Structures are given as C-alpha cells and as structure tokens.
Image (cartoon, rainbow, N blue to C red; front, side):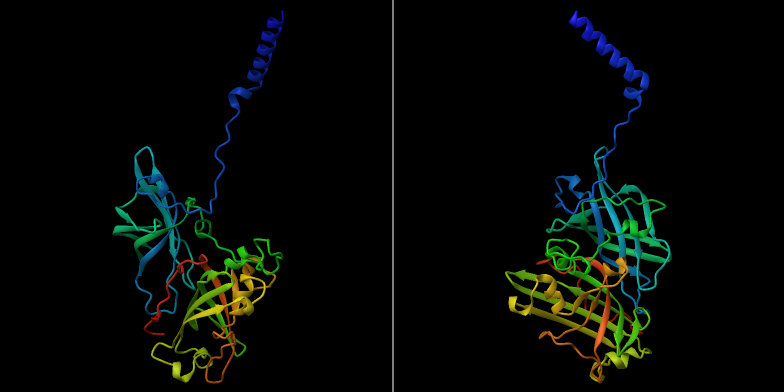
Length: 355
C-alpha cells in the first residue's frame, strides 16, 4: 500500500511541474561574466593560455606626430581567444590613437578573425608578430610589432561599445578614504601602489598661471619604485617640451636650458629609508612630491594627482631664471607594479621638430 501511495505522490508532483511548465521552460542560468586580475603566463603548448586582453606594446602611428605637441599613445584592447573547435587562435580589437585633443570613434574589428603568425617572448607575456599587424583608420595607419598581455579578461567589442568600455580603466587611491587596510585608501599599501605607473602631464602651474598640455607643452612621467625592507627607491622620469610661442618657456626653463626644442628631461632616483617617511608607501610618494587630490569630483580624484617636483634631498625644485615653483597635474594612463620594470620607457628626444 505504501509503495502505491509513494508512486501516486511522485506522479502527482511530476504532473504539477509539467502543467506549470517548470520542467520545460525553466532556463539554465548562463555563465556569470568573470573579471580577473590575473595574467596567466602564455604556454605555447596550451593555446587557451593566450586567452585575454592585450595592449599594443611596440607600434608606430603614421602620419608621424612630428609637427604637433602631443603624446604618442595607442589606447584600447586586442582580444586573443583560442577557438577549440577550429584549433585556431583568433582576435579582434578596439584601438585609437589618443592625444591631448583627440575625439570621435575608434578603429574596431568586431568579429573574431584568424591571428597572424607570431612568436612569444621569454617573459611569457609579450607576443611579437612575424610581420607587423597593420590597421588603417581615419587617415591613420597603426603599425603594431608586438602586444603584451594585460590580464585574462576578454573585452566586449561591439558597434555600440565606447572606447572607455574597451580600454582597461585604472584608478588611483582616494585621499578621502581612510584606514591602512582599506584598498581604496591612499594610506594602505594597496592604495599607495596604485601610484606606480605612467602619467600624462595635463597642466603646469608656474608663477600662479596655468598652462595647458597640447597647447603650451607636451609632457609625461613614469614612477617605478622598488621596496627592500623599509627602504624605498623611487626612480622618476619626466619629459616636457614647451612650445616656442608659449610664455611658459621663460617661466619654466632657465636660460641655460633653452635649446632648439625647449626640452626638459630628468631621470632622478629618490632613496628613502624608514627615517625619511612615516605611514608606509603612501607617505614615501608624498615625500617625493606625488600628492593625491582631495577635491569633490570622484572621477578626477581617482584618476589624477598633483606633482610638486623635488630634488633628491626632497626640497622643492625651482624653475626658470626667477626660481619659480611649479605644480603639475598628472593624468594616470597605465599602471605599473612594485619591484618591476617600468611600464613605459621615456626617451630623451623631442615630441616635435617644430615646437
């Protein structure tokens, strides 16, 4: 009797599910998008390790930007994806030359296409094309010789995606956040390490006058610290070329520094021991003049910093024949890593031959 009742109950429950459509119409949830901070080493014997988001590493933008004060930077992403069915490595991209004054759309390849022939460097992160990858867009040609893996994520490149959707977005720490264990706080180790990397100089304030990047000058900076115990080493490279017609030239450059290109270049290394700073890495950056913004706008606060140049004894640098103090506004472009190679090498060559 119990077996009959059990069988009847089972049939009733099954019929109820079928009538409500639960068994036939309930969809299985798709995979949750996965955002990874990891950057898996490329193993040529395991093609799926190529999967991820890459940045252009060695490239040329033509026509060359040799007659304008601008910073050469190709922004966006190249996706690599191994197709297990076809056994081929495929790619698509969204890329744009971005300077001080660039606007509009960007070059894009939406569908995945076969990847060109390549080699992989010993670092297991850099992929070099046997023949340069050439992209033509908006009267410009991007000739890309190598790319480097950023992380394991794949960017979604569509007709409606903006460049900000595709480009890897880096944020700095926030001076308004508090707590040494708060990853958003500048007083935390995690927050302080977000200062490491490559910046574009957006403006220079000299003698209380603000001068604009792309108009009065072009400039960039790299910070590349290392840590050994309580000793911090912070190499800082700065390059600025001032427009011949800009009054910034007299305010910023000494007579002895005026040259055919009005080029200012420094490559200094700051050595700090535990007695030179208090509060960890964040105060080490403050010591050399890198200061987080405490302003109302959250975007500006977490994407830009102030730089008050110091000498290697941590005294304020002065500029021009009058000994002017200078403050620079830096926009964060690309993140680096503690105890690693700089994300970009800044060479002591002018941006333009006709400043």
